[in-house]
Length: 234
Image 1 (cartoon, rainbow, N blue to C red):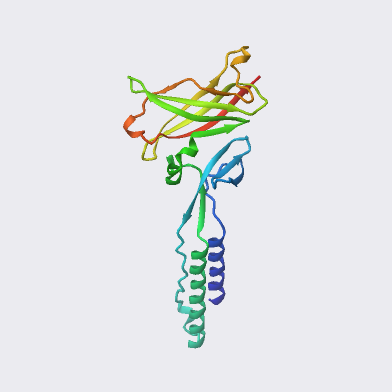
Image 2 (cartoon, one colour):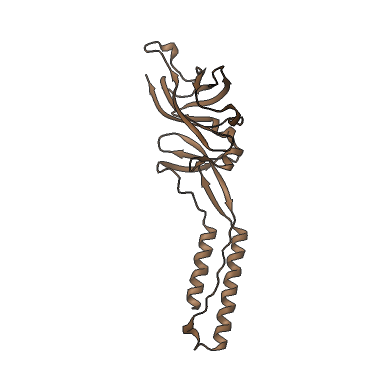
């Protein structure tokens, strides 16, 4: 029984000390990097990046020794010693929980809803980058048909001349629930008109993208996620 309690204590200590990462981490993730401003970024194998959010979780690990009918023949001295060792193991686990809380790393969206941490740092999610090109949310507007208009700013430090940049926009209600997802060509150059290409060192504004089905009253926080999903260059 002593050995079993000791093993449980060691396993509990290991689980508490080792950081845990959420299961939704993408299979193509290369690394998690902490920036100088304290934000954590997940780098992906397709040269994209996205912010992730670290959430401390409260630990409530305890070990409760259970009585066994087979231990009745054990002397009172051994029983007292085992009980004391179990209590000491529980105290060690509780102390480890205070010193090293488990930390969960998750993307901004879990289970179809934006996490509380992501909502608190919504400005970080209004930009995305891939292949040396960056897209940032610029402004919104509403027309007389109740449609939401979105504008973005594009910049590039790539040697590629981009003619098409396709982006996925996730729009979330003030409660954090996903309203809808839209895919747009945030940059669309004119074929064989080089001056319309997005080139290195340039900053361009997108056209206005009109999106239907968004309730203005539920989108006052302007919660969104952006992700570049395809690019073409010449």
